[in-house]
Amino acid sequence: MAREWDADVLGEPFRQLTLDLGEDDEGPVVATLVRALARRPVLGGILGDRRPLHDVDVLYVHGWSDYFFQRSLAAYWTDRGADFYALDLRKYGRSIRPDQTPGYITDLATYDEDIAAALAAMGRALDAPASPRRLVLVGHSTGGLTLSLWAARHPGVASALILNSPWLEFQLSAMTRVAVAPMIGLHARLRPLEPLPQVDTGFYSRAQREVREAPLEINPAWRPEVSMTVHAPWLHAILAGHARVAAGLDIDVPVCVLLSARSVTPTRWSEELTRADTVLVVDEIARAALHLGASVTVERIRGALHDVFLSRAEARDEAYERLDRWVMGCLGTRRLPLSPGAYV
Image (tube, rainbow, N blue to C red):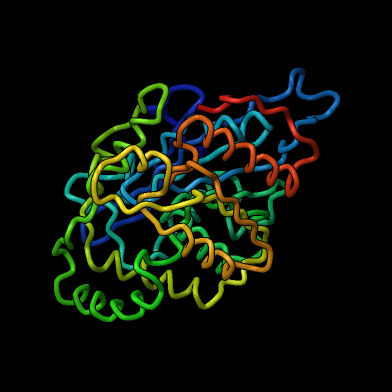
């Protein structure tokens, strides 16, 4: 029996589907798939669907302390004929349940279950015959790391991988990562639910508000001003993911990495924080990206924030223009005209 897609908090055209993932130590676990389908051609496309991405499904995965709310990102894809799906992973956003530890995971490979359930709901189960539609994976920050590792473990499934400021390397350098990983691993075993020191000052959230022409419509319970509590097992899983990237992933599809042109350490508030990545060291990410596979494009966006698509207008427009150039060159049959401020 077909599952029911319910109304979503974002309103039309978005719908959501709850994906049952069984139980863990904290009780029932779910993920949530959100979709926005491209409008179908008039009269069923008698002359064929000529939109450049009419045979593409997009699957988006959010970052740490986050969930999917970016209507404009979905519109970019559906305007070109693609069907857009976004996954709120277990214990994030729409998927968080009472008494669960937000974002808690001990191995990023556990998200294989979330992704497999999402693909099955999209009509492209991993154990079924290959879909005639192409799959594009889009990940932000931690979601970019998660999808990179997934794509490496599942060759031949996706057609392209697009990463928005992916967290591919530890902020304090690879050498520091190697040094601290054993200590974090010991902490994870001995005191798994003891909170680690909070380093988020809330400046990144403020920077996003400062650069917007209109307020961001977000649920602060799902995306708090200061990031969710960090626990050692989660950080240990992240560091293990970084180590796998550093060793080389050999992803078999083209990869596009979008990054800010520069990073700034947010020690105190200044206007400079509205024109840079204050979360990751983007030069380290650019270097780590070269370990993803044989075909990697790195796009550096001047004035962009950590989420390049939530930056001020000129950087945001540039990010969409760079994305469009890459997507149409890699996947499309023709480019559609882009005007400034098309996706806000």
